[in-house]
Image (tube, rainbow, N blue to C red):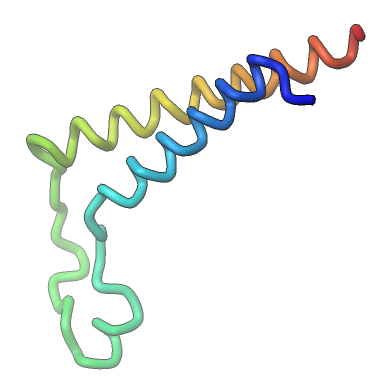
Amino acid sequence: MLGWYDWVLLGVSVIIIVLCLLQGGKSEGASGAITGGGLNVFVKTKERGAEKVISILTLITVAIFFLIAILIKILNGQG
C-alpha cells in the first residue's frame, strides 16, 4: 500500500519529467555531426530568461526528489 510520501515522490517525479522535457537541447547531438551542423562547438552560450528559470527549477526539484527518497528510506527502515 502506498503511503502519502510515496504519492509525493511520484508527483515530484512527474514534475521532473515535465521540466526535463521543457528544456531545449543544448547541442545538436549526433545529427549535427552527420549533417555538419554545429561548427561553433567552443562558443559559450548562456541560458537566459525562461531557459534559466526552467533549469533552476529542475535542479531544485531534483534536490527535493533526493531528499524525499532519503526520508522514505529512513521512515521505512524504522517500521
